[in-house]
Length: 274
Image 1: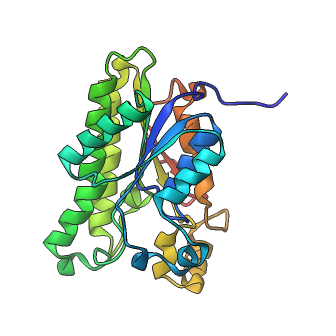
Image 2: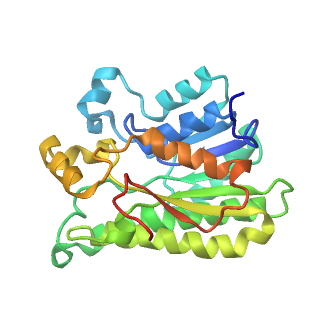
């Protein structure tokens, strides 16, 4: 007899930042569909000129390609180009999701600002760059959480929020002041939200991935990442986005019904205890 997670069939999930071919967002959207959920996938509407070469070669179409995968699994999919740092856009997103698919039961706050101009020493970090990172990573997670919770309070089945944070929010590190601060903020938001919303049947948890094989790693060479992994990760390899997605699906399932307010490291052992 196989073991199967329960409580997901027929539910509706939103996964933000799900358009990249090599990403945690895409993996989460597909795994929730496999578990029986209909899925709303969001993206920023990035231009095809910004696609990495493997996406261009594959004829990738951002969130539309992810939606095709979900429909291929027999589930409904809705694509929405939006800015989660914009309050009105967030409300419009939930309004559309409810009209098209019904009450949203699961929220995966995955969207994050791209690596780039923020990866500099704090003395060289432009205020507007800091604001952009905080706007997407922390403000966006807050706005999505607030709208989801407001609409779900009183819903008999409760709901689940899974925030995608990072071990960077626990480790800090040179050249990551904006990113690390935003992800630490996501962990604090997770804790406070869980304590406030638990009596409403809404569970809130965070996942803290370590080095994961997504397109966000493309700014370093493979040799540089290999050196980092060898020095820091006991399991000796980079993680796969699907491994993070599996943890997200579990946290939304009945089997995790007594888990809330946690920030789990999914990192090959880089961090332990904390």
